[in-house]
Image (tube, rainbow, N blue to C red; front, side, top):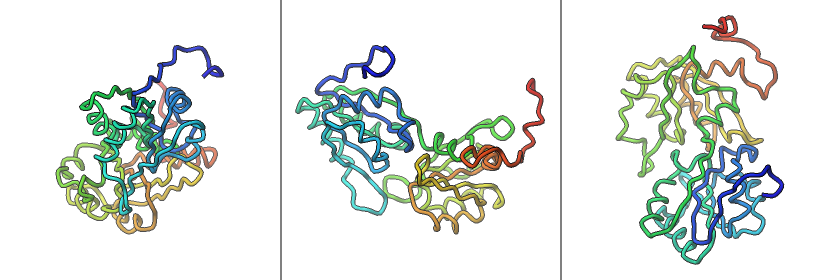
Length: 273
């Protein structure tokens, strides 16, 4: 890391596993600690959502793919966790690289528990989650004082692959102005039905952001009532955002150029407000 400003970089010791977030896609959103880990690691165990260009920053490391994608053959989570234990016990510097943040619907907590149970020391390197950074790249702020004072992040499926039955969708619908759903395309129809039954309007703005922050990023703007139909038109990975904050994309779609409109009239508000 000699080409970076002076800093007391943490030592990546043999036999350690670093649980590291790779961010939502754009390599530039990687943290400096993550870049340091890539350069120091002996082996990188990476997920399906890790942008391939990021792995180029680990030229000397062995690369092991451990991606899990819905509906496709995937390694068992327990096998992945135990593989990390085995690699660490071989005295290797093991970088577990996960898309987004390792502790936000990334199973990093489960892997960390297994490592600790087997006496393997760990370090956690947070990353930018797609539910925040991915939406920001689409020009959608997850919070805005004229729109929402809360935001709820939920997963669109549980351990069985079904829509989470343990979630109280009615309470979620009533509790927050903005709802951000990870991995929700498959069960969009069921989730939509639950939210509308709890009082959310079918006309409520919705955005589906796919391949967030990458050159392949696409944004589909729709409504809650049309979400089940429109969700079938896109492929994962995707983030679904439900709420009036989606309208701010008309002004804040920075990748498309200067803001087109100000749908909430926020520019007229005095700075002291």
